[in-house]
Length: 234
Image (cartoon, rainbow, N blue to C red; front, top):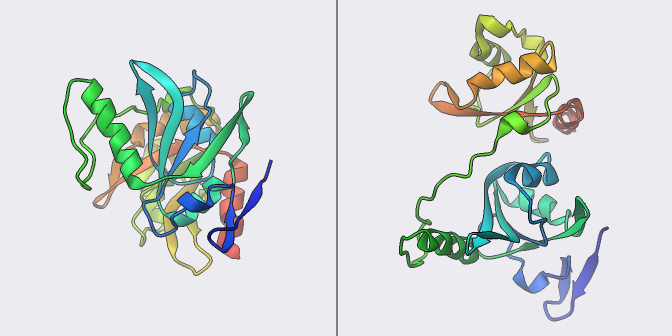
């Protein structure tokens, strides 16, 4: 359900009733509220399907999930798209999505680290390292499509085919590199395998390198690959 609320105090339109907190030039993070208490990072990835997520932090207090989360995106355009998913459903719950400050994200992490026995004070510096809540990609739904992220901008289809090696025998015409409308590469690509089983086996290449770059692999869908191809042609 889309909502548009005009902010009288600011004198210009802001979406979703959070106009006073929206900071287009700030850190690309949003806050989620009202998540199901059995929510996992996989659920958040699915909720924001198609967007480029850098980090997900599920907020816990006294060892229990609060229903809040912070999601960091690759850029501000991604945040704009994320805000459009405000009040959409996750299961039977409406999820609020709204802008927040970098400090809120860092302080939430600091509180989590402190609760684990470490002290930290926010001083406008990056948050302390914390145990990475790894997304269990084995539990995600697989099709014959994998999404690659973090590619060198100069990468070619043949480079990606070679990345998967002789074991998977990917031909260059099964590789689609995503481009922005201005013709610049996004650092993402989609690869079509012979089957969903082959795609899942190819996840063994997750976090391996092309050149000096570590490449992330994710299960994807043909629809997502087609949308990316359509955007590249615009």
